[in-house]
Length: 340
Image (tube, rainbow, N blue to C red; front, top):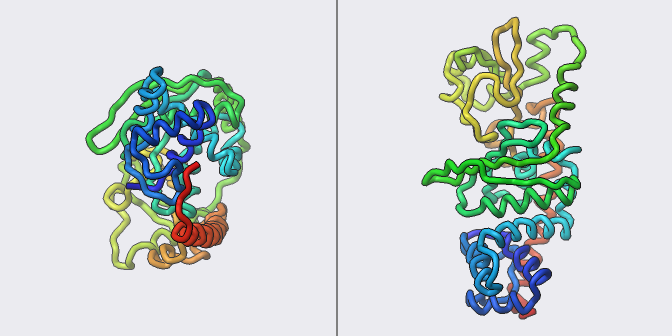
């Protein structure tokens, strides 16, 4: 059982497109206690799929997959209506930027919804005609829902008409793993590549300066062994922990992006004259309690990014949200639900 925005957005979408009478019929068929959903309520994990199946039977047209995609579109519209679209609008100038930023967008919600288990997304290949997008989740049957979300985001925020097809399904018993081929005008990928090639040549910096700027840096040799760690990342371990010379995967686990950990992947910088790869990472923190439990302080964080500012702003937002939730919960206990 889990709290879901998807139920309320699906309900709103059905009422807006197919009418309130259709929704009332679904409520009756599925024996819902109320005609509305609470964003704070807890519902069955597969309830949205049951609604899609019931809608198919009530309308006598389409398929559950058709309406799962429709519900994905409704979810984006719901977020837009309630003002959550601002974070989506700043994801990037182009749709490809959005695809590359989906995981970051999910991470940004960890302050508001700390218990939310977000799916994983990452782009593996792209060309001028589109990109290959991997989707991985513990939940089953949501591939068409994701397609609806992608298409609605492309249209609404980037004025882009896209097509999405399932290129492969490599799901296991543990999780869904769907590979999408997303077709769209991706000429910006070539422009981005050109900009990266036309960077000026700058003088070398000393290793001392480098590790001051990147206190969470991990230096890795070609055999994927740890050669050196930045000061702040060392502070995460006890002083007698042997780290240098150990294989990276023996000490760390790659969570995002969901790819095989290998040489020159992700935020890696090849330093040719060292014959090393530097991984420029940063801690993902949600609360001061979590920060203190790791033995970290604000002055340990990177100079070059906004981790500390995001952490402080996120905690303030979380407190505001908690106050609002507490108020709604009290009202919920005092006022009975009414039918629409």
